[in-house]
Length: 77
Image 1: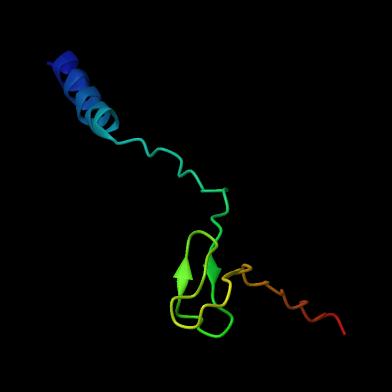
Image 2: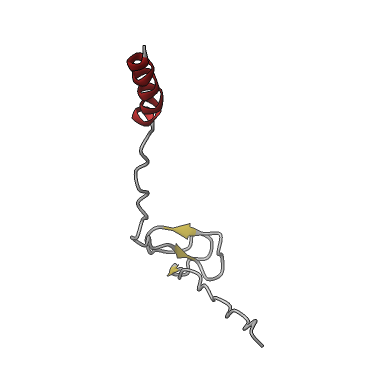
């Protein structure tokens, strides 16, 4: 009877571990996709250089936004 109890407890605690799903690490897309836009019509967006369909200007590469981190204030003063 004692052995049956030990086996039942072992199965009770081991079963959830066997069914737990392992998460795969998320791969970040490190490749930067180039985006082209019209200087006069920013709503015109293309994945390749060309001409703006509204005004005929050359599409220019849109630069990614620059992130500026604020310096932390020194709390020891």
